[in-house]
Length: 82
Ligand code: FES
Image (cartoon, rainbow, N blue to C red; front, side, top):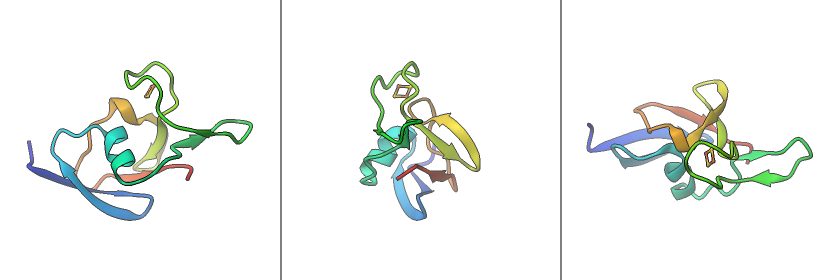
C-alpha cells in the first residue's frame, strides 16, 4: 500500500495516506456537500457503512458511487455536487 495517494476532488489535487476511505478524503478536502437530493437538498454521508446512499459521488466519470465504500486510488478523479 502506498504511503501517500494523490487524487483530484472537484478539480483540486489532494494527498491522503494510503488506505484512506474516499468519503474521509472528501471531507478532509473541505467539501461539505457530496450530492443533492432530487428536490435539491444538500446531502452528506450519514451511516458510513454503505446503507444510506447519501455519500454518492462521481468517480472517474462513473456516477452514483458510494464514497464511504471506496478506497482512494492514485489519480482518481472525483466530482461531488458542490
Ligand atoms: S455514508 Fe451511508 S452509504 Fe455511504
